[in-house]
Image: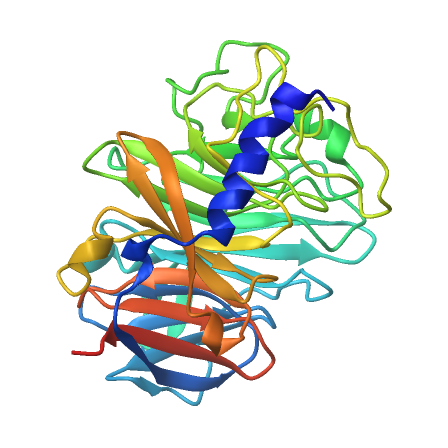
Length: 368
């Protein structure tokens, strides 16, 4: 590995060890809901109710901080094994008029499964009119690395992250399949005409970017019109990336990590024509949910990125300056819980999902 390629990563690791004075912010953490089995995603409806997914295949409804004891009916059956299960829930931008929500989940069997996205209408305490809008192809025989995060852009299109399936990592450089990609769809599942690879015969028209490993955090900053993702590396080499359409983010041709056996995946940490990450975490933090803080409760954190850490059992706060990440600190480590999702609530509070069999929704508020 060339020394010049390693130097930025080493400097960034030194920043982790020397936390700056601005790291201090008084806060308190309270439990909103407990008794959730590996909660994965949290979303608010316009009337203030919350939806939360459990990886075990259940969609739950919360009203006035009270968990409805009965799961929402009509949810498609998920393939639940290892990392597979029910993933993201996202209300449609026009939910108030249509009642539509989108769910991502693993679908199939251990021998043949894939990432599926469905759209359904929430009618009372059940889903009705369930329809498939996206199915990643081809199917795989692994139950890991699905991606599964979703996000609506301001233009009304839907982004979906698709993992590399672990055993299929070389396919992340092949535009004829969905492994290791972000796809962009119209709400009905069709590919927009202005996607970057629409006119390439060797590419799937819905692909937006490629060369990813397992993106489980995605957020759009409406003020700067910047799109950010957090991507799991192998053994080390977790990444924060700024996403732009049509670009190649390198995996597995370039990485700062090594294989779990300790073997080198590639000799390269950068190559021409492939995007370099904004930040690299080594050792790995296992980044999951990603949020951008916009709110009144924590003015010192305004405009900062917050990324959940599964292995780190904390939340990374990333300071941005004109579109570049400039500093970093780890928050909420005293919880000692795997953080699956990070959300900013309508009230300006920070909400965390803990990834455990007895998972919780936690709310972070200023202590004063």
